[in-house]
Length: 280
Image (cartoon, rainbow, N blue to C red):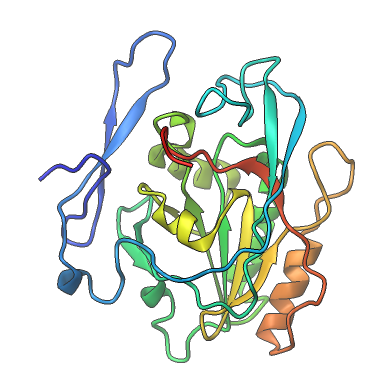
């Protein structure tokens, strides 16, 4: 059975590339999957649920930047055509201690479904889960890509102890095919990321988590509750501040050590998530 947005088959999602696009348009792709019932999927549900409460979101306009595509709805919204304006969006600062909504999403590289339950299936569970909402095209993500690679290598090596790290890609591939699943799989190799990236085709996970921008960072504690949300560090593409990951690394260390969350948590800033046309 084929679904417009993609379905699962045997716990795995197959990506089907579509070539021969018309001139002036990038290649697109589609997810082909077969619907599974809630019983088949287990406790990992296909649509995220929960009651995150966000305290704020702010949008700022940036100077023109170079790129290939304009915004997703005709409004200023992304790194777009030369002369277009990009919108810089801040994180929605979800209330600390909020239980993370569950999810079950396909890995862009393998098609295997990964759920919040599966990430916490170890005994004992990880002391922290780092979740990064990201994409391929955004200059803010490109700016910190090297640090994301270094951080993921440190997490994988065990530097921070029992920590897991994942990425989630939620951008509309209708408007931004450069962020399609196969492109994100290429990003993992090109950027040397040592964490899986999951594809949020319905954008329900981004909405339920109140993810607003790319990159957007969340740290969950051992009980799956929000311990940290906000920025990687103070660096931005144009402020000449070195990319160190200071804020996020400090929070990760504190979480693993069982210390209280940092009192000062500042929002991340980046391109707004590219919602599907007709949605907000």
